[in-house]
Length: 195
Image (cartoon, rainbow, N blue to C red; front, side):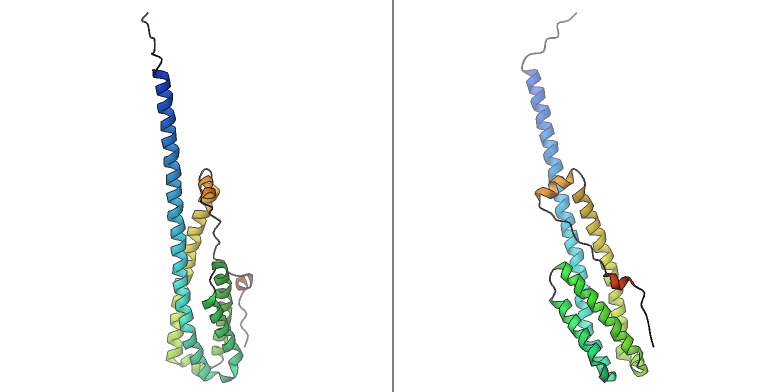
C-alpha cells in the first residue's frame, strides 16, 4: 500500500481557496442584486415620468376644452370652475401619492364637464370641441397603458424587495415599497347618467 501522506500546507490552502471562492460568489450575488435593484428603480421612475408626461398633456388640453364649453354653457360656471381648480391641483401636486389623488379628482370633474356638454347639441357639433375631446380620449388611452406599465414595474421591484436573499440587499439600500397607481373607490362605481 502506497504511502499517501498529504503535506501539512495542502489542507489549509484548500480551505483558504474554498473560503475565497465563497466570498467571491457572495460578493458577486450582492453586486448583481444591487445592480438589479438600481435598474428596476430606474425603470419605475421612468414609468412614472411617462405617466407624468401624459398627465401634463391632459392638463394642457383642459383650458382649451373649458374655453370651448364656456362659450356655449355660460350658466355652468360652477362646473367649469371645479374643472379648473382640479386641473390646478393636479399640476401642483409633487409626490406620486398626491398626484394620483389630484388626477383622480380631475378625472371626476372632467366627467361632469362632458355631462354638461351633452346638454348642448350645438357644442356636440362644434369641430373644435370634438377635436379636443378626441385628443383627450387618445391621451386617456395612452395614460391607461402607461399606468399599466408603471404598475407592472412596481410589482416587479416590490416582489424582488420582499423575496430572500434580495430583501437583505434592499434593506441595505433602504428601499421602500413602491406604491401602485390605483383609482379611488368612487371611480370603481358604475357611472350614472341622468337626463
